[in-house]
Amino acid sequence: LRGDGTVAYSAAKGGLSAMTVDMAYSHGRQGIRVNAVAPGHITTPMVHSVSSPGPRAEFMNTLRNEAGLLGTPGTGWDVAWAATFLASDEARWITGVTLPVALHEARDTLDRRDPATYVSWCAFDAFGAA
Image (cartoon, rainbow, N blue to C red; front, side, top):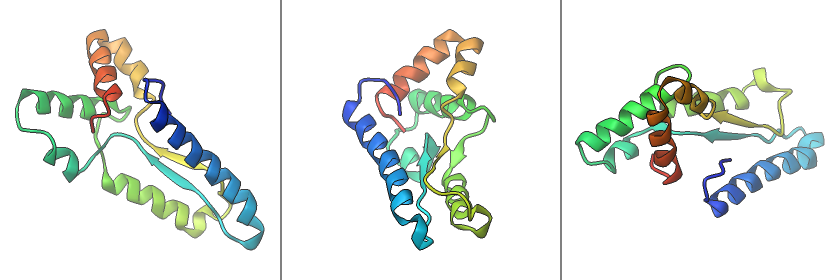
């Protein structure tokens, strides 16, 4: 969830999180686990297909790559591995959670390193790019 003026988007995300918890309560005694995966800015073929090559695309790729706490971009495989874990026997006692596969926490890191980059990242994020 983010507070950048996208009320409908935030309400929908909050609704999915609440629905996940409610369904976990409703179906847990039937042996059904209900969880959600919340991907953040993930680099996918679609991301590359909607951005024309050039300085802006390179800037956005740099932000995406450097913004994460690990310093690498997330991919569809990262989301798939999270979903695979939640569906596995190793997660047998996990239900009603929304697992973020995201780099939300990195904004503070960007702020400390370079305020101009942080501001650019917030503008990038606010307009829903990637």
